[in-house]
Length: 150
Image (tube, rainbow, N blue to C red; front, top):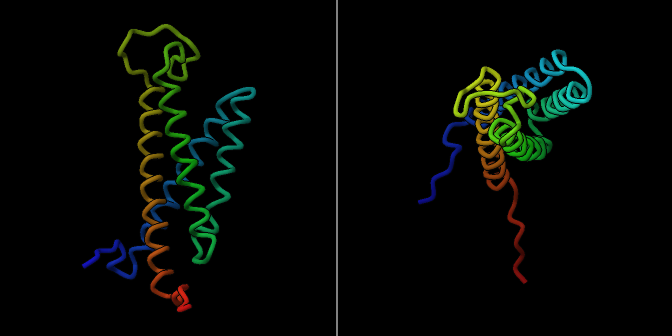
């Protein structure tokens, strides 16, 4: 017997709503960083925050755009988690301190914030993956078989 994630009819909506909340939080964090920063980094953060917000309408309303937006968020979350991890772990990166000297192994406040962002990005990645899987299972159950008898 094959188990599926969708055992309760409200589970897809709850997961999608959770993904929307995390996406909104991540977009807010990027927009806040844009207002605090200066120069090119502020522009990049602002664009990324607005870019995150573009997925919310199609995620919130059921339809064909849910899976596409979830894929988009899944790949963007993975990319952002890697970028944030590289930002705090590469030598000389300074953990958003722009190369300031710090003791090896010491966690700065911006470094802790980056770890929190990485955790949120990975949670968004997990939820987006679950939304895609549940959406595909629901489509399989409701659509007619695509195979033909030739």
